[in-house]
Image 1 (cartoon, one colour):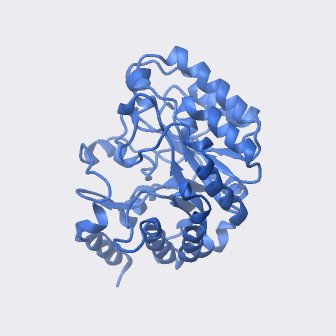
Image 2: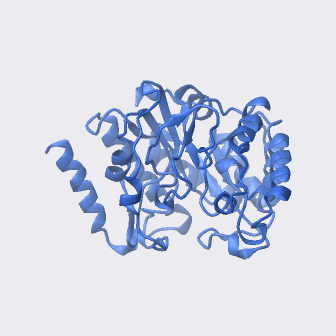
Length: 361
């Protein structure tokens, strides 16, 4: 079977999967606008620069799929993407067995996709050379068997877990797929589970709203030997009760990021997050210094985020491509058109964080 036929087979197989495998997330509010995505094409500025994409997903949901063939189509744009890190997306869970063990199915699935790419059959990119899965750390010490199962499923590709703890008094901001109580990062059972991560040498991907950043700093201080990877630059919120309040909230976010930078075990993914900063963009409240401020928080204060920021060509980028590829040119520093950006790291920085020698995969 030729490569193109094989990728088509993967796509068609995913399309006919039963809903029991895909009904774990709601359908998207809008379809992917491929015509919009195709409006602008640009050449890579440094096509030889080795890049590791540290955050993308693969999923099948009702009326909404993003599988290996989609991802490879997005990354086939002239960049030297040598490897990627998959991050959990609540898809391909097991449909039976203990509830706490069902997320292991996602890691099993992704490790299979990674094995396909490791053969070289799908090109040079080692998709999912690193895998960040999911486990319920609120189980406390009882999460250890789940983490052990994830390690077996992901083998040497498995690096850690993501547990979304974004909470706000404005319930309209909370993703119904991730209901959490306030101050979860400080709860005793959560920290008991978190301690197991450190003991096993696993990392923790955290996604919070910017008012919760001080809680992340407190957690980092309590567990200095556990790597914490902060998603979406601390998610500066621009919707709900925070709409139109950038002047008040930006300094609050910046101060929290500066305090967080004092913890050497914290890493930051600099990336656009739909539904938060987007409203500030739509309202034309984002200053040209936003990306520069991210540089200041991430570089001048010794957070390990060195490398390239990916620029989006337009502020209205369809959220179905958010975190899932759709490569646009890489830019160093800032520009007036760099308000929508996604995370890319040079390979050396990703190796520091996830202790991976990407060339082996």
